[in-house]
Image 1 (cartoon, rainbow over the protein chains, first blue to last red):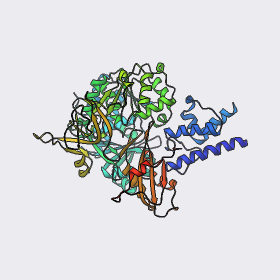
Image 2 (cartoon, chains in turn orange, green):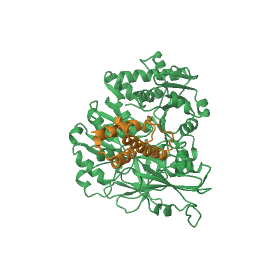
Image 3 (tube, rainbow over the protein chains, first blue to last red):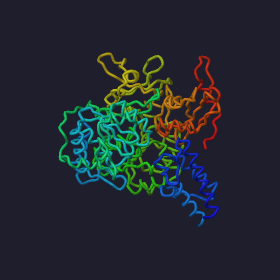
Image 4 (cartoon, chains in turn blue, green):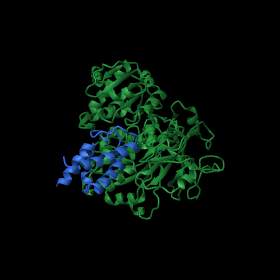
Length: 86
Length: 527
């Protein structure tokens, strides 16, 4: 794993943990379903997208904001890494 | 003509046995299957002691089985109580105790998370989920209902004024309150919808609202009444506008009903195209104010679709409606909530206790009378008497009317316009939220001395929630501590996204918390 990937994941983790805290959820693992646990609501998704666009330097289209890319921290990381490698 | 809700299903099951009634998560029930499953569930419930008027809770993420539960419970003579599957178990435990739920249809983990008191008070539970084998005491797997007769429901003598379901909404004193709805209450609305929107067996309806939300009453019962097909929008879809847009296209939805904020999300983030919405013929929205700029965008995007604003608190379901007139929309500042639905009367009463006349510039509180009005709140005579009051404008016989708490005006053309609330109830994403319930949750933290919850108006979701808290020991408490504490007591949509800690809260001359001053403080941009 490269340094770049590590830091991307750390950034995602930090963002999601902060969002989770505002919803009173403390136990956030990389495989927790952010949707089922209520950590991310409809506005949270778009805040996360803006965050990723700014901090990870990716462009995310509306069509890409779907469950399979945003279900868990692992999914988000995989999605961002794939985009960065293209 | 149906006088109890389950007759709608039995009639459609005779006419359209093989047609799909409901679909979700890759599963579906035909009308015959839904009729049979609900008959079996009714027999099972009755065999295990559920009697007329007993409350049965439905507590799992929405699925095709949800509808079998609703009809099965009513066929057993019971009253169903849809419980928010995402609410904290502490809140659900309270509701179970509040209306003395006798039986619960749920999942193993949800049952396990309930308070010991709630678990003990429920006589038995039916568990959904693949691994459920009934090994836990007083539980049985969902599949056990297949042992019961499917071809007819148990004999019960029901009337249209019997309770059908109880919907819990936010309560100002810190605990949710149960709005009781009779078969007649629901059918008054369902009959009006059937007539107004001409729902037919060719229609495909969506169900976006959670089942504990009164918008779902239209989705479920008007689908079943018409022999149409209902597609449930599961929680994961509601978060992803692009997926939701594909859902509308792929399921060929013809009638959509949701809160405006869901439509705004679709408009802003789904890249909606009219050619993907060809079969859509009606969009209904309710639950909060639709920002005009977004409504105009929607009206332009789908010129072939009729748009209706429906208005009404859970206590009356829908009581007024307004069909959007595209030619007038450009010049309108506000969208009216409109005029009364059939079999319902509404009027506004001003500060002098006089009924407002059309075109007068006065404001008044909206009252509703007729068969749509709730009998009251479960187990709460005081709250019921405060809201469902004798009709003092009609002295000839005893009759009740509902005080909505909504302040309105009445235009020359007879349309009502929503102005605001007389109390501190707010709407966020269509959810009805009593600021008092948030404050009670904050105050229940031992480190909190004073707390005030505020709603910051927002075009996309109606309102954002903020709280200002004065702790006993300034510096010993963080916003995150309080948000975590709130999460154990109130649903996530009620947790303030911003909590400001102050040494003390501003007071009015009478010593009350000065909410006006708090609301006027500059609001930081939400992150």
